[in-house]
Length: 79
Image 1 (cartoon, rainbow, N blue to C red):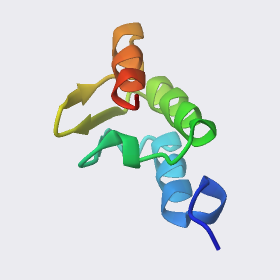
Image 2: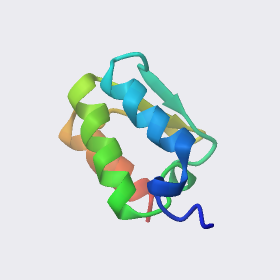
Image 3: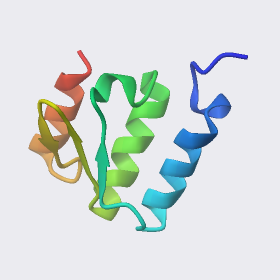
């Protein structure tokens, strides 16, 4: 079994669910590029975080996916 997508990552799916329930206000990660393994997981995470005001942070900064600039910075961090 591969962990290449959210379908095989129960912890990632739980995180998405908790953000959707507004139980999470900040996601901390050592490196945001490792948080979601591919774009089909990354963009829904950004969408739900932006919708519910959840910030994403790593060692390089804090990103607000709810703002255009924050979303752009999140995307640039994955490049």
